Image 1 (cartoon, helix red, strand yellow):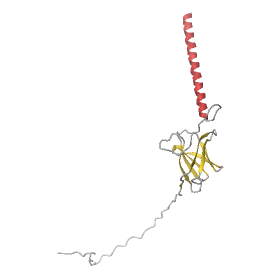
Image 2 (tube, one colour):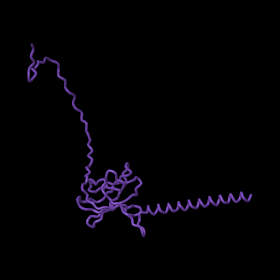
Image 3 (spheres, one colour):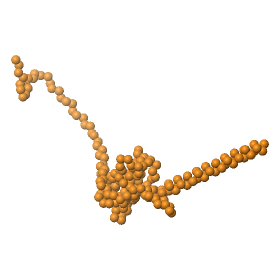
Image 4 (cartoon, helix red, strand yellow):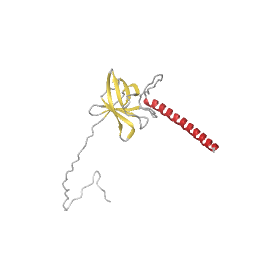
Length: 190
């Protein structure tokens, strides 16, 4: 019985040791995951902020698709995110020291598309763009470039078609008609 007890005790100790090692590994993994996800610079670490640019054919980072201007004058910046669960953000654009903030929202049927709306900017000037996480306030991406073109929105014109009743066509009264020659050449009979 004592050897049976010793065997169970050793198995219990080995099982607990394995469980403690696994628990330590899970805690370590979670802590490194949370530090990477925080996006904030830490002492002794250099954080590289992704550069914001126009979208290419195979873009794996946050990028700008296009610029457009609404009828009321507000400018829209259309973004493509690298994944559907990309954090919500706001956009700030600095132009000669004046900073404008743009509210951003996801496009309803396109989870990797976001549209930011704010003050109109003049095309051709070099602007500083900063994308900032809405919930954490951390810088997600930044870049300097000029707006090279803005698509102008046109208002939708709703046309209403009014149907009017047309008078019925008059039919000719039967009577005697004389044949008329066919032009340019009259028919020739043999």
